Each structure stands twice: as C-alpha cells, then as structure tokens.
Image (tube, rainbow, N blue to C red):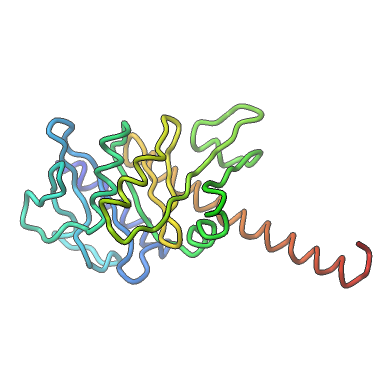
Length: 212
C-alpha cells in the first residue's frame, strides 16, 4: 500500500501546485485491492495544499474506513462507482472554473465532444477523425444518486464524467494515466472557453462594423 500512498501523494502535490483544490474541494483515490475492493481516498475537509501523514484513509467497497486516519471524503461513492464499472486503478475529482463553466454551458446537450484537437491523443485517440466525448450529469445532492448517475453514463471508452456546476471525475489504469487524462481535460476545457470567447468577440466586431 505504500507505493499507492506515495503515488497519490505525488498527484495531490502536483494538482495543488496548479491550484485545483479551492476551498478544500476535490478528492482523489487510488485502488489498493481488487478483491475485496479497497482504495485509499482523501480525508474529508482537509486542506489539500498541505501534506500530512493523515491525508488518505483506506476504505472498503462500501466506503467504510478501514484505518483511523479520518473520515473518508463524502464523495467516495463516486470513486467506488468508477472502480466497480471500469478497469481504473486511480480516480481524480477536481472543481475548476473551466470545468464548471463547460458543464453548465453544455448540460442541456448532455455531453461535450472534442474533435480535431491534438490533446485528445492523451486518451489514446489517434484516428484522423477521432472524437472524445465527455458525458455531463446533473449535480444531485444525494450522493448515492449522483454515483448511480455517473455509473449510468460510463461506456467502455469513457474516461471522464462532468457533473453540472460541480466538477469532473477522471480515471485511468494507474496514477500516471489518470493525471494525464485530467490534465488533458482541463486543457480542452480552457481551449473551448477561449474559443467561445473569441467567436463571441468576433461576432460583436462584425455587428459593430455592419458587415453581417
């Protein structure tokens, strides 16, 4: 379990450097055992910009703590849903401005699709006409309901799910892959927001010049 702890601590350190844990938000996990399912998950309510020996707690397949480091994140159910439905070995959940904006803007559509953007290759999509689609679910206050909603949209090719005005959960077979997927998602969201802004600014310029 020491290696998994160190891998998760390194990810927390790197994501903290990116300022992706505002207001103690976000939670991270890494699988320790398949049968029975056990994973390390961030302790609830802690300042993730600081490092302590009680940053993570081991939980079972029902989210119950198996060690006394503290109370597991309230959103542990989301991570467990991912582990039960995929081959994931690590799951990351963060709240950023860009992923919140994207989840709200595209919620009615139910997903956002990226095509022709280089960073989709981070997900192993190398085809000329390849696409990356990220589902978007409602932000249910009841966490078991939220976990089920996320589970219901996971397909074999799914590696991330957005929660409306809440954040994103991404996963990978290991810590390195999960972090790569998260970094790529956040780049794509930032790209999309800047593209929408540029298009809106261009439209205003066209209208102002009367050339429409």
